[in-house]
Image (cartoon, rainbow, N blue to C red; front, top):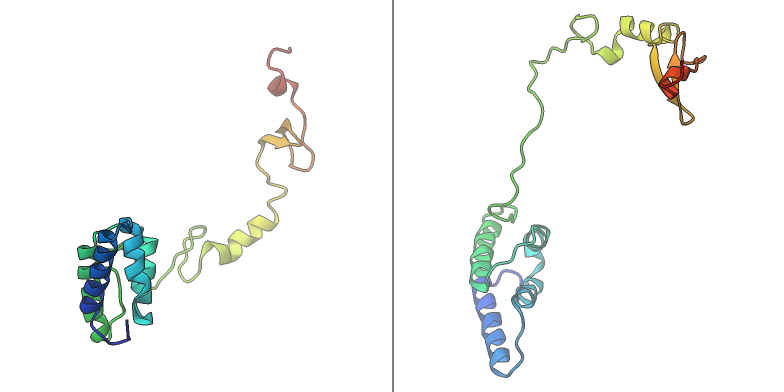
Length: 162
């Protein structure tokens, strides 16, 4: 198909050729018929062809013709050729009013990752390390003072021991 010629005339011609091949005993399945039509389209339909394959659409030849006519009209209007009824994209996240508040100190104009108070506590955090259970080297350890010096608790490993 030449760029700028009618997609309807082209697709109807290809459908007629597919029908003639079927009458001669060379029957092709629906997917091969669709691929034959899609591969014969000019470069301006490349975005549609990619979307058609990515969404794994399986339509009849008349449905494919209707979709291609819609894309052709969009191309003539200088719009991007998109697949109608495709994937809806939603915007994620909350809308902010422009002011951000630190979750650590509660002051405006910075985030927790940039908070000087939070960063100071993180630097001294080794001394205030949480106490509890730690898995280290395949062993379950009880942390009493710091992560650097864990104390093995035999009751955690073997609850039946005194």
